[in-house]
Image 1 (tube, rainbow, N blue to C red):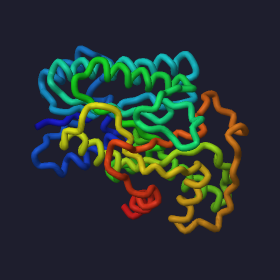
Image 2: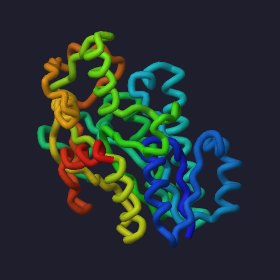
Image 3: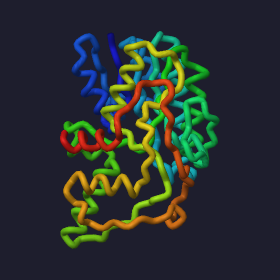
Length: 292
């Protein structure tokens, strides 16, 4: 059985590759932009014809939330978040492949205090979120077997890519870099937003859940493999510092209204997990991330 990963050098794609490498009955084919141009639909179909994958994990996305508000970013977001998933859905249906498509809790407006279950009505408030929702619809309309997996605040990457310039830095990494510069006298500590809430998603937990959905033949649909524990950026930053013995650093909080950003973020994008097994506490996952 063959599994294809698209966007294999990213945070999630690299972890998926590591996990699939442990499965003796699955041949993992990992592609990134340097080995497969997913926007070239002719080349994409050639790959399907050649490999006939049982499952495709689409980790390709445009996730520059603020940049998506300008014309160039909006066009790229539409291409990668809408047109590519739509084409993948069609090809998966044609070649009898299962599609695992990743989306975001930002498809909701964030006005709910308790969060959003899988069947909650989306109401995106940014171009990025609008394109992710359109991508969800394209997959549901064109694929015969699929999993739309929503997540928020992804972190954690393969140790293999620790020094790779293509691997996007996660929030925990950024916090520690800023703390190191501050302690060396090279910078100041920023303020962290205290009134935007969600639950951090550890890439290893997400990758395991994604593979489990496929291997155990869950019904097609939308899934929220989330720990359902509400936390702010400020709280997350404090926990990162604590786990690294830096709790003596006094960081300050700031309200979102004081952050000049092009795109509007939901106040609460917490995802309610009502269809999948319980995911562990986000603090436990974060501790494992550093233990690795």
